Image 1 (tube, helix red, strand yellow):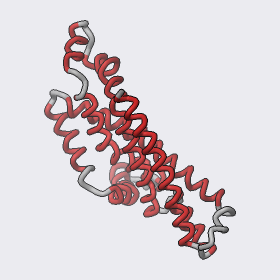
Image 2 (cartoon, one colour; image 1 turned 135 degrees about the horizontal axis):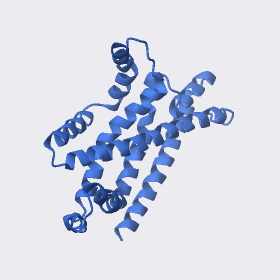
Image 3 (tube, rainbow, N blue to C red; image 1 turned 180 degrees about the vertical axis):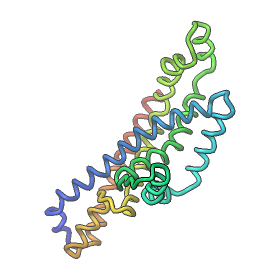
Image 4 (cartoon, one colour; image 1 turned 90 degrees about the vertical axis):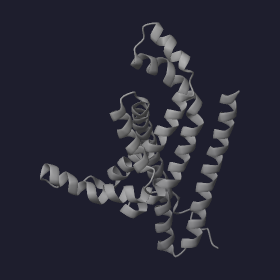
Length: 221
């Protein structure tokens, strides 16, 4: 095993890591926003909204992420062409970001829903007794407390997404893993670069998981 070729390749690997982090951050932010909306729909007394959100969550939790990425990359342009009558390429990066947002939203929805349900119903009643609307109660009282409780779970799901970003190789995006694989192929040291990439993923994921556990204990206290 000769790891000497890794040092000259570090700039390219760093660019790949930036791509990975960018995909993760955008997927997490978009997923939390959409997931929160879906969670409120599932908790709504309106059966139509609750059923729509339920079907969405159950569907995306029942299919692999790789299929979602491929579908958005290959099928969405055809759908847009059918709607607009023009070729509308969305690109590999955009398709992956949208796929991550929509896929992760199904998981963030359940996390947010559990967080909201963990808040005492008496607080909702007290807020309404003070004349606050449903939207004000959720925005100012319920959701801030719920997000504090579910922060560790949101971060843990973000770590999972960090690992799942490696699937973008299927549409040709050069993330960290794909960058390591390509660099190894160029100099004929694929095994060394893959071992290095695996070690980096392990260190980042393990360190982040350790910090999440510390945060969870602190929040619990």
